[in-house]
Image 1: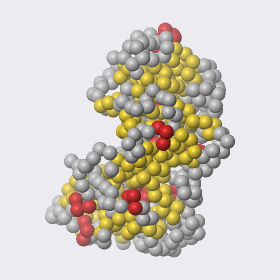
Image 2: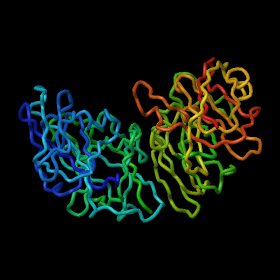
Image 3: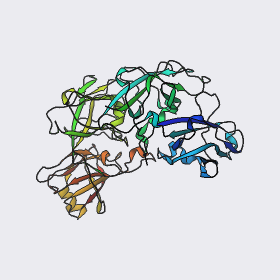
Image 4: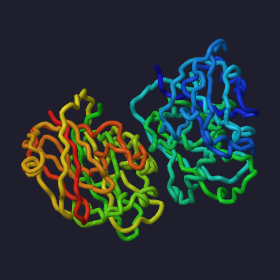
Length: 260
Length: 250
């Protein structure tokens, strides 16, 4: 079983009512092998001003098989997918699933009207590859936050062009190597990263906190994924509805490990 | 299981507001393949001192959050540029591997914020190997140690342990935040290097439910023919502490 990650996508599930709430159909995930699912408990979500679900009490998730006939997972407490509770130890799926037949069973009235943020890690062979070399290089990127509503592009670092990436590591300094102020850990919880290759989002709206690996018991390794720095970006959750004055002018610091 | 064969330490003094510090060059592991580098600062409230000079205070880990590492390989191949020290700090569960021979004169630490005056420790793990170790026999001992004092393994065995250990296969230290210490192991033929290893590298315990202070596996080593008289435990603080230590042996 290949545990390495390649594609990742944030899917928001609107909790419209108590009881069954279907997970929306996502074309990019159709016929894909889903490796893992993470739940991200946070208030501010990307591209929406609706609040996210944080309290997983009496919340359950069911995942249907690719034909929608039977459940691979039935009424699993959502807390089991909460990366903060499991310390990064992911629930293994490793099967194709039917999203539109999967659902979240909400028995918590406080969560009605909110969104559940699920991260689907899926197999993406078009933009990943096997190891070609044992030699890896660590490089760094400082991403300045200039815009709270639109995209904050990753700098176009020529030395990382065309590389195959194995790890993305979030750092939490107060001052970055190029002497910019960095976002605090609390602020970083509202930052999402999208890594694009051409017009395809290899990693889409993934919370950068999932790359804060030091506290996790399971390490996330990518299968030599490829993406273009100049078309990749960070966004801030909340769609510009909250007060973000503290974000602008600060930076996010990331280390990338790639194949030499 | 990943088994370390050799672990050496050097100390970097942060003085005079300098923000750039280079690796030492006259070291026994120069020209050898380095597996991992781990930086150690102080997390405890107790004043911790370096095992090298016995007096310089360890910097708090907050200082090390603003430290970065540049590593260059022997063929001038850049291995790491601005690698955050957080990725190689002792409480990180997934230390970034080096796995290269380093050109030491080009390897350095830089700070983005002037650090306080003090020092930090850099542990260099080299010639690591993969081995199947059965960690079945162990002995856990608890003993008091005066401020900045040391005690040999021979004295520990005679007074507290009553079990003869010749081949140590793993060590685990407990309450490492409150009772930090250094362990030095030597063998009679000087085959292995295990110099002043801080107890935080041997931790295996959650702290306030935070797994970042635990390790999935104990620190595994393959240390034969321990020289009891020249191997010792040293108190890392300036106060009297009680140390709890587990040896796995065969």
